[in-house]
Length: 135
Image 1: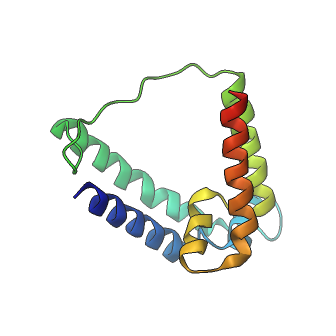
Image 2: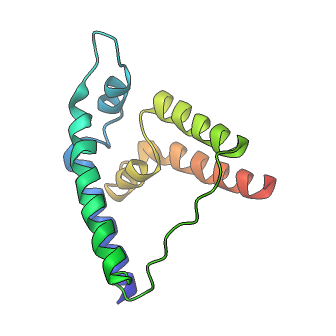
Image 3: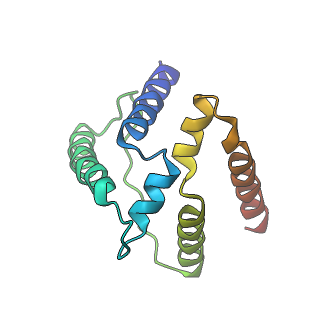
């Protein structure tokens, strides 16, 4: 049952990314080009719709104290902002700005058998492994 919930959640997330245009690197890059003539603010609506959905889900799960698959809903432990967090965030943002794609949308491209994103996916997993070993 858990695997079905995970599969359904991933499929809904991927569908949302596809419909919203978040898997289109050119659309993402034009959104990130704030202050230029080519700026496209359309993805603001994606964020504007995602935040209330998350907020309502969070309140629901917090009151219920269990996830939909029955495991205990645990609140993340706040961590201080440190050098690793700032460096990781900066690297993520730079990569996102250069490629116009981040991990979730890249995996959606693989699901659609768009193999031109294979290099990005491989580099992403190499980066995960390098980070794991350096830690």
